[in-house]
Length: 429
Ligand code: 9WN
Image (tube, rainbow, N blue to C red):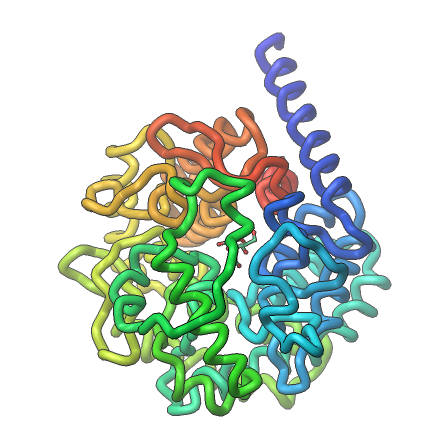
């Protein structure tokens, strides 16, 4: 009927627009997150964006992954940014990450490892299975090397969970969860710098200057040891157990295991099983039953971090929450949703530091909504998943941007944003 035709037309417009955004942000085998604001290839953005490409150009989706891994370090790490081509619109660029004489092609820190999840998904959904198999064969050893790097470089004490050494590695840079640990990071006498982000986005929506001073102090300290991963774990004044990284890595290890079996690489399966078991044992220590939420942890003080953030729901995406934890998380999420017009806010809307327009301290991110919805469905919370999905659809209908205000749905941050477009294609389409 008429209403349905209208709805269908609206969706078609949105999908066409999303494909256009990816095409326009394609700089040749890799997709920048947004023009001006983020002019390079970002790690987890690319993995999520590849899911979007796969809906209309499988070969291009695989290329995104190949390009990301082309910058893999000898020790297995995959950087959080790859600087394929020069740009002047982002700070800190390659000259800060490298040395003045020899700028680096990539940064010395990582990001949540979504890639194996993408490769698994791309393979399963591939129409061109021959190409998919070739690509999986090419990417599998690289994924394995990256996951092994997480284990050795970021869990040298074999706790079962991996460490995150920089807020940028968490992908949720100014999350209120990092307020406490960042307070213990001193500000060194670093060279003066000019932030480029503030020329693109209003400062009220971005991390603070105090945070940037610490972000850069960490970069300079890491650079002083040439990002030697054996030293970084011990010398970093910021070392946390991030819920996002650990949830994504657990889920990525499930995917890696699946890929290993599919390829007949059975000798690595026990190694992956050991990692998975380590996660399961240790993850329960991150649950705070008093507030029915998972919490990140400061590894340097041993304390669970107070903030409740949307990362606390990601153990659902991982499938690592127990059924009773999942039930409590669903109740917490319902309570959050009753406080805002649209879900899911990145920070607890009941908390004093909730800022609906400041980056990871309140706004809604489509990629996080997708991950949590995927988790809710896996645990059988279909109605709640439906609520988040229809909220997301409504938000994206008002513009494909970086994030949204949960109180009124206003689009904010960077415009024509790649991973938001990708979620539209891979999830809502
Ligand atoms: C630093 C690209 C990236 C995302 C992160 C998001 C933001 C960068 C920045 O943009 O971080 O990596 O300069 O703010 O926090 O999740 O990958 O979209």
